[in-house]
Image (cartoon, rainbow, N blue to C red; front, top):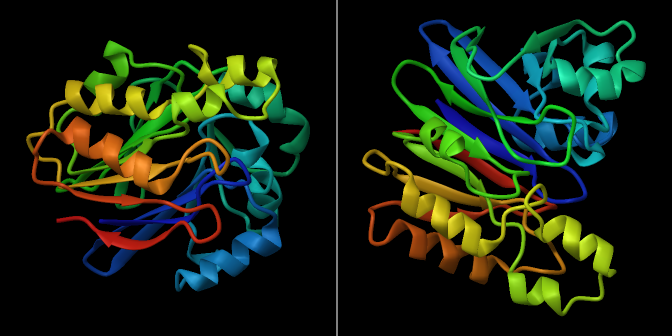
Length: 258
């Protein structure tokens, strides 16, 4: 199994997860927050064509996660998985799209991959994040959550790799030019994970098999890659895991799971 990002941040998100078994290969796209043309361009950068995508799996309805999803799915005849709550928020965009539903705890079998959604605290209709596995490796994804919960800690236990939101530094957010209402939303219990919150999550989860952590969904105004990496290192507390940080413009290249 391997994974790569087409871009990560408030201007658009898309994560690729791929698994190979014998002669078959399955690649899913987790969220699609770029235009169809831009998604196709970024896929080519990752060595893929639109026809290589076997499914799109949606976390929630915010535009930086779904703005291109349904147009891409319709054009390339790709099925889309999402929660019932998310569907209620986006159903006007779903005409002629192969829509399939998911819910917390029920695993989705998509080719060589199994993805299990789990609910997270975020200001959306029915937001979920996912753990992906291929029978050997386990990848956890957690972005767009406001705070640590025991449910997400349990969901991420025993992952080999983790894509973890490090959206903002609390002090930088407090002193930023953002209006107070936006600061409250981002830093609130249903907003985005701060560096400190990401540290706490890493300290809480079972890291026995964890070998790679990628900081994701960084605010370009209220965080830096250096601060995010330091927060991850603190949360790992000496655990033997590589640290990297995803970017908005270039995401990150393919990472092979051990």
